[in-house]
Amino acid sequence: MNKKTLIFDMDGTLIDSLEDIALCMNEVLKSLNLPTHKIADYKYFVGGGVDILVENALDKNTSAETKEKVTKEFKKIYDQEVHNNTKPYEGIYDLLDSLKDNYNLAILSNKPHKFTLAYAQKFFSMYDFKEIHGQKKEIAKKPDPIAALNIAKSLETNVQDCYFIGDTKIDMQTSRNANMIGIGVLWGFRDESELRENGADFIVEKPVDILDILDL
Image (cartoon, rainbow, N blue to C red; front, side, top):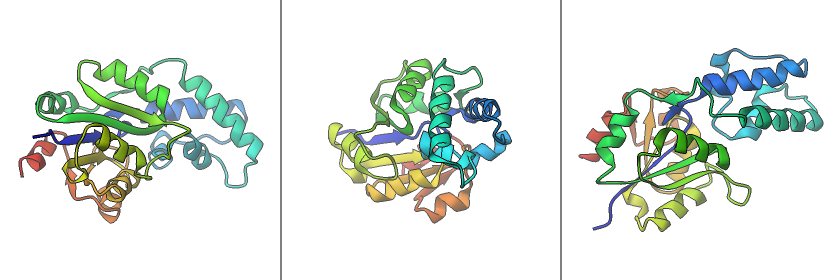
């Protein structure tokens, strides 16, 4: 019998990266004499990849040239290192310890692929994540289901035996679009109403709560 598969979003689900994303973007904005934002504001800027982050951080009337410059500078700054303020959420390691022998584990993020790999290597190299994917030019990003479906196919798991775990509407929409089971987490960047309104099958407050769902 094939193992069930758990696909995790990264930012806001496995790792708390908000402060470092905000600090890097604010550094870019300040250098270009553009308005900066409070760290908490970035909870609503992230989740859709770098292009959406830039769109959300800038005024809607900002020129395409400025957007391109901000994007380039952000990638340059953010790519300098695995940042010190970023870390796995409390309870994530305990959850993964409980899952590693009985489930296929995968990561699907809208963070650029090389950053996704870097953070997976930094924090989760001790776990056998079968598939790790960030945003790639040749693959449509979440909430398009194609990357999630590719993971299921690669791991020979039926979609009804796949759980998609994330903290934003994009993750829940991805789960719904792929006909997978959506688990919305409340320790990340968004609230329960957003998760439920976008199709979450389950809502969890702590990582360990996911184990109760899997036992149903």
